[in-house]
Amino acid sequence: MQFSAWLSVTASGFPYRKLSRYNSYVVVNLNIAIVHTPKRIAVLGATGSIGSQTLDIIEKHPELYKAQVLAAGRRADNLIGLALRHKPRLAIIGDESLLPQLRAALEPHGIATAAGPKALAECVEAADIDMVLTATVGYSGLEPTIHAIKAGKDIALANKETLVVAGNLVNRLLDESQSTIYPVDSEHSAIAQCLRGENAATVERLLITASGGPFRTWTHEQIAKATPDDALRHPNWSMGAKITIDSASMMNKAFEIIEAHHLFHIEPSRISAVVHPQSIVHSMVEFTDGAVKAQFGVPDMHLPIAYALGCNTRLSGAEKSLRLEDYATLTFEKPDSKRFPCLDFAQICLERGGTAACAVNAANEVAVQSFLQGLITFPQIFEVNMLTLEASTFVAVPEYEDFVAVNAEARRRATEFCKSI
Image (tube, rainbow, N blue to C red):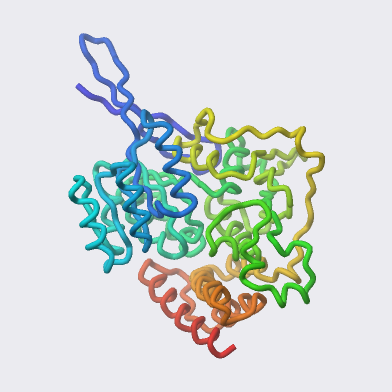
């Protein structure tokens, strides 16, 4: 006879309000034997940086985790290699034209295949999925995350745009579901760790750290002439092109402030960014008694990924140890919104609410791609985002269909602005 064993992960005053399944128990003659069944994970964005590091952890701990579904956008060859290595039940490719290639390579090995957004949304609802790791890039993470919440799955969220675009909607759905979101972003994981065991009433500020990116010490004039190669040279982190450009513009910090507001239910006025070039302090929480708690770690994503997969439990050896004696100086600076105006979108979007952040997110995806293609300059990323925000339809209390419509409209308008600029 089997029973489900559940581990509470609540923290006073904060949204860790759900339970997460860990083991099955077999009862024989009133003696309870613990059978450790691996947590079955759907890895969305398996071929990206976060996805590959997640699979590193799964491979090192097969007794804890199993990659049950692997999904990617267009990198069929990479997905095939990962699927042959990790043996998931199902592999999904976003580009439906690549399904024949995927099917021919994997189905002879007993691995089912599928393609397209519908398959991605449906896979997270399957009974044999315990957790969904959402590491897709941009707006594409929203729909499968909503399906996972409605299906009651726990979510390790690395796709910040999900909460940026539709944070209020996601929180409404969470209130009606057994799901819990565990943040994978290093900054939000750090805040979650600092808040464990604390009372929400004692929190003064959330301090989200930023490396400053490759242009931290550049002048206005230098930034105006920056090339894509310049912007892709992040000093500390190895990430995909989109998030690396967002780091250079500090748009990623604007998005992280919005995400932190929805994750931790702290007023926007009490969430700030602070530049920390060494990327050792991943974020901090200031309390009403003047104390500040910080989470330190090397600039590597294995620790926050493992912390999320384990539902806020620690996995020994997930990340190489930090030796503070190796760092002579840790510095902190106030960010310069004049050189990095994209940072202002955090307060603009949170003040307006509704679909404002959805429009900016869509515009930014288009603008970043246009910059990488050499169609616009680096400062024009901000210009395209602002023009699109002002021109796009605004819905004050949106439902999912409104986000779909505004996203499509904003992309169209941003594309037109990139051409006209």
